[in-house]
Image (tube, rainbow, N blue to C red):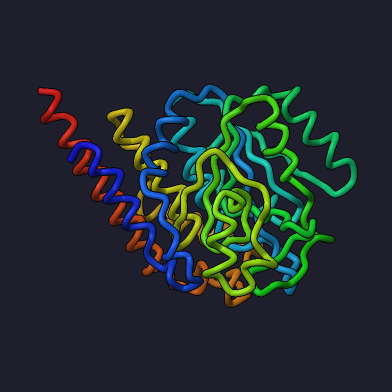
Length: 297
């Protein structure tokens, strides 16, 4: 399949982008670029967690994709650091336990957030910084949900991590699905035109690479799949593990960001609908690995 493997996987994760108008934005090749960056990484920071005010807990989209990617990177011998806030800490811990991810989890708070972000670079010296479904500040300095609800008082400003990374020349990547996540500054003009409340909610901070996915978790799976093909070994977890991860999140109080219910759904999509995407990615990875072996021979 060659490079077509990445294109096919990227097409799979674009499912559901039309739900918010994001299907009108094309960033072809972002998946392959993401994997090429991370395959050469040494230490990777992954920032995730999106709080839902009604429940005062994190949502089910984000941590799964972050831990999926963290697991793949650790299997490749990379050092990973996970960053979230108090609303997603336990959720993320449970996800890590299911997949055996050893990455430390750093929790950001409003108090002394600037020093926290500076210390992250001093303590870990990352080569790459990634955001997966992490709310970003809009042009007005506030942080919004997809409905335009102001979350600024709840969300520590982890945009600073990406701003520091840029100043230091460190590669930045992001995965998002609705326009209000870190990284979307790269396509701000398009988000303003195609997303409801786009001008208000669009995150201002941009990243070097932005991967769009109908559900941000799928973007994490997709990068793990692409890394699998590049490295020649399967790094993606299986369907049973996916179920265990989501169940562990629900036990920790996570809610669906769209329905705001504590149930086995993500962004209003059933577990089976989410599993279908993971299964499709996994099948494409298997085909890509097989093609690599054949071509290698």
